[in-house]
Amino acid sequence: MKLYNTMTRTRDEFKTHTEGKVNMYTCGPTVYHFAHIGNLRSYIMEDVLEKYLRYLRYDVNRVMNITDVGHLSSDADTGEDKMLKGAKREKKTVMEIAKYYTDAFFADCAKLNIKTPDVVEPATNCIPEFIEMVEGLLEKGYAYLSGGNVYFDTSKLKEYYVFNKHDAEDLEVGVREGVEEDTAKRNKCDFVLWFTKSKFEDQELKWDSPWGVGYPGWHIECSAISLKHNGEYLDLHCGGIDNAFPHHTNEIAQSEAYLGHEWCPQWFHVHHLNTQGGKMSKSKGEFLTVSLLEEKGYDPLIYRLFCLQSHYRKSLVFSWEGMDNTKAAYTKLLQRIASLKENDGEIDGEAYDKYTADFKEALDNDLNTSLAVTVLYDVLKAKTNDATKRKLIADFDTVMSLSLLEKAAALASAAKEEEAGAAPDIDPGLAAKIEAMIAERAEAKAAKNYARADEIRGELTAMGVTLKDSKEGTTYTIG
Ligand code: AMP
Ligand code: ZN
Picture 1 (cartoon, rainbow, N blue to C red):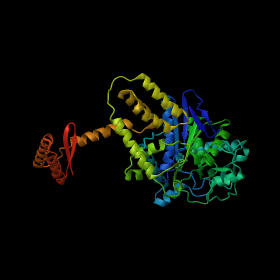
Picture 2: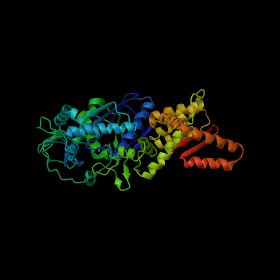
Picture 3: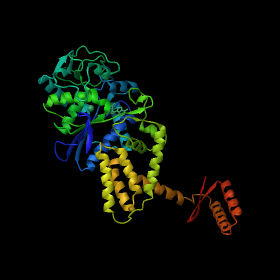
């Protein structure tokens, strides 16, 4: 499998430290608000990647943190903790906010068929691990105390800008909004490992540490949580592209300085979901959620398909028109799958191997999910039996997770119920009258008296009865 690697800026052959085993880490949500569908684009594509690795029979250990402390409202080390801001907004405690939005995040994930990672670890569970790592960095001379905070000293590294060759000006652009120069830093790109001093003294969650009562920086969370659950060698690190700098750059700096060896060779970054007005962002406060999609009548899996239809390394512009087109495509896809016969003979090995190879070729090519969706359509058109098609669809859906067979079965049974419901709970006298009129219309048609047949249909329509003619006869619905 070839996967684009932000570290090398090329599409590399996917490798692991131990054969057949993948240690995978994903930056989890900052739980101060609902996840927007932009965040969820990243989690959908990471879910596809994880499931494809499992499809390829890798043994995957996927770890995700929950950021419930330390993520400040600016990516530089200034600004208020996002969690505290959320708590103030909702007049609740930070832990109440964290619990509420963590649950909401996983509820959204479930609706999008995003699997829960093998390990989910809230940052507030790992304070001793963060302290241990910061102590190690101080001992090794990679960190210093200044103005009450512990900073990472980026001047000690051979190379800090591992993803792109930022110069100092780029860095200023990188840290963006509301950046205030932190005079306690020795170098411009140094970052905080442990805070005891902040402009915002009302930080709710604080812990004792060798440097005073305080709280961890955001970046140290991911390094320490990955180390705790994935060990010293990570195979694959994922996140949205905005995390590449400074967050992932800082994770690499501190992890490698602490461990004394290379940490993670492969970096998978999902590009942004944008609105017509630019990047969708939680902090701007205007964002779309899974609940909103549902309120507007979209099954969340339509959004999943919307994401799969484009490549993860291209930014994607969200539009309702795009969602409508995807909704039509999804419904049609399910209808076609619903029409496949069950138990329709033996699996056709040749066709099975051909389409399986096509599916793999698409995903082996830097996770080309839109091409994989095309292979799904090819299967439906293929000259092979329905049993083979159903088996291929079931296999592919272990990766795509569009609930294709289940939703198609539900669609088929709803259609059957609708048909069977032709005699709803209506007054038996009225039902008898309708049945008699339908019989009379059939006789009129048989006698080629179409004028009378139409007249009867007209009378029934006026009574609120809709007729449906098929080879098996005429059924009706009322209302
Ligand atoms: P946060 O909850 O802000 O820590 O972000 C959670 C994840 O969503 C991170 O991996 C971000 O990089 C990613 N992300 C943020 N905004 C977007 C967006 N508009 N499109 C795709 N991913 C995003
Ligand atoms: Zn992270």
